[in-house]
Image 1: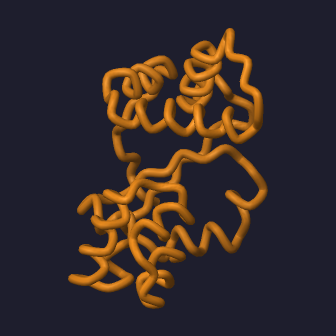
Image 2: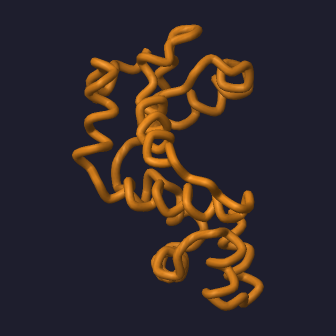
Length: 149
């Protein structure tokens, strides 16, 4: 984890935030968690205090033997694979369609300007749970945890 390496090196929070392109507030939270529980405490499932469900497409790295073994070793991780080509079942497709609509008449002068705008819009959506839930609802999928084999 790059943030932990930077904490170990004594790098200041603003520098870490800049390098990782996250808010200083996030880095302060990570550092507090890291100080109390070490590297292991920063793993996502422990920060959330809940199991993780990951929905993947069938990219070859997602279905490799190595990845299957990695997932099998982690009882807190459930992976659900989408059918071969199913953009209508992928809530991220709805998110990108929403973002693209918001950029309809944009004339960015540079790629950096476009990247900054995209990051801001994605960050703003992060806190709009109703909209994010709508992307999932649009797929017709439920958040029920499937039984583990």
